[in-house]
Length: 268
Image 1 (cartoon, helix red, strand yellow):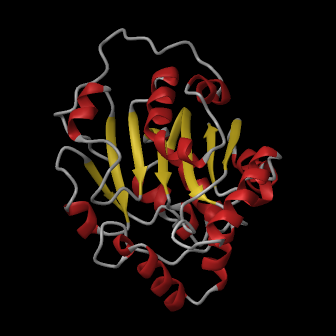
Image 2 (cartoon, rainbow, N blue to C red):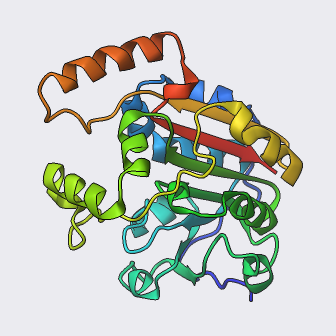
């Protein structure tokens, strides 16, 4: 089925022209890209808006947006964009603002392109979703099929082999959940940011892990932006200092094996 967009969101003005096209890396550099992890969180929305303006991307799909989408309703009009929120849970989607279109489906299911329809969106993006997907290659194939020619995708995710995520992958789910809930109470099941099982399939901060796959699928420009650092050990004396020193060295030397987060950005 095709997605019906709400009429309350205004279209781009007739005759409007997107900004001159730049490369993905040039857009990131314009925003002051740095590999410090704080930049990744502080500039996620700015990166999406900058790419939208540079490439004329109006129809957005936020994967895994649930009840808490990236943009608020006023920003849809402000930036002349239409956003469809995707989630596995209809309950979560029902809690999202009514100004958004809703799409309840598994983005990694082989049937998704047939159910949703091909070339429906200009821009698809997700934040802290890919690590929870079993079949990441199928997810990227589906995203490619859902994008219009010239469309773009951005996935922001944690990476192996940052120590906290290695521990999370190796530790039994019940134990890792208990540890996380102790250190970060807001990550409890009834909190604002509950924990879900993570698989880290293809969640790496280097090009060799993901770029060949995306090229094979049909994306023409693929960029991986690595980030170093996190706050998971900040409450643990001594370990906090040791980990910060190691992260500093890894970032200085750009040891991609030990990135903490990454943006994977691709254009169709």
